[in-house]
Length: 57
Image (cartoon, rainbow, N blue to C red; front, side, top):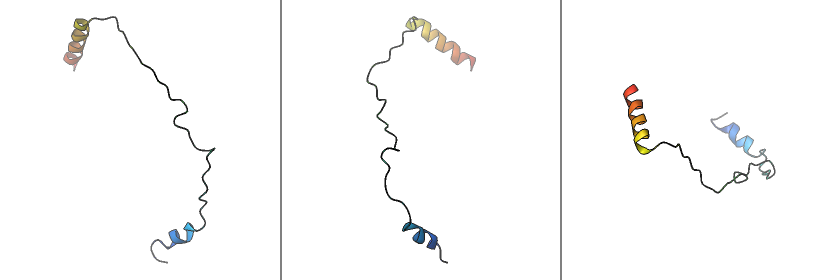
């Protein structure tokens, strides 16, 4: 039995039919829209908070 001979014998017995109903539709839950987040803090507060986080490292 040579290298890969089992591959050749298995090739003829494989089921090549595709089951469309069993496949996953990746576009089933596509959503269009925007996400907005408003923290209520101004730029200076956010910069101070970032600097504080960097100083803690």
